[in-house]
Image (cartoon, rainbow, N blue to C red; front, side):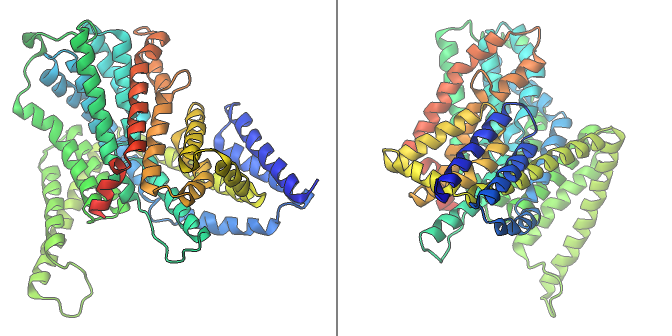
Length: 523
């Protein structure tokens, strides 16, 4: 057997071993690292793997750990968990329920809108599904909503955090796509490298994310109009009326935070990492405000100081260390310094209240755990990809995808199917880290737009989160709804939403401008 044939056999065995071990339920980080070490040793023994390639591992790990973009991950995770613990979802659901409750399917529409707002605020799928399942499901069932319809609505709304920015997984996907795009251009002999940023991917996912929300609500309205028993309207006197003050209290904080984070990224004012820091500070101030225990004015003053600093930064040059700045800039720097002190004081007050309310410690612990899991998986996947490519796996995958009829679209369909199936067993983060570095350079080299590809991958994996029998969202809801609904209710209820997801994915494939128009306009 030739060296190339031995390498191909080891590649296939390596991928088969990965899939088989994943089904055992062992931590994916250990599986990736173990497979890479075992098959790397076999490759060295058979003379088909150059062990000097492993010398690049330390440099790649260092690059991962020092990546400025990936610093956004713990900040976005902190922001999401802090908002989840600040009980913002409860107020949103209550206000939206009063606003739309008297409409047929009004509670379902409220869940979809709150899911979209939480997605743009937290971006954590599991937390959103669990929160909605605990709060919205009992209310919907109490009002006579059809069980499958209520379950499907909650599961679908909870997964919007995968596609609506700012999303942690979008940060990882953006970093992987940027690297793959550079590789594909170098492979084509292009040395004037074009780049793709996380901000562009955020912009690309905005319209598809809003499209999904609109399709969900359209389905809920039509379904409840045709069959009122699915989501009966609540009499106005029972639903209650929401005052403008209540609506503002529920809506303004998350909307202001969303505008501050996404607006700064899409407007080119801040990088995703800087915007994530803004989000983390804003979430802490909101949590401190909700925790109570004192006057709200230190928090209000901190918020106004942050807005003032942003306005000053847009109007004046606040860089320090200049030899002779104009008088106007000197005055602006002095005011900005004062505002920074006010912001710091307000932040300390918020942190103290969160600590006293037993919120800060659990949030920090959860942030550390999730961040460690993500980065450990990144390192394991780096080693796996290094060995897989060293054995000639990338060439094998390129040959296989090129042989599929239909060119780019045929190869894209095959990759999407594999990722969809893997989504039954693996988390979005793990699939992005394992599969995308292998297939993305090939698809990009075949002419796929990087933003278009990234958005399709996100929507595809969001669909796999919903698909029976292994969809993660279904397990999340099933875990908190025992005694209220059956597994069959959850599975039946999700079918229409899976079809909506697939329809949206087909629209994005047919009309790439849904994903590329906004990034091209802004960037």
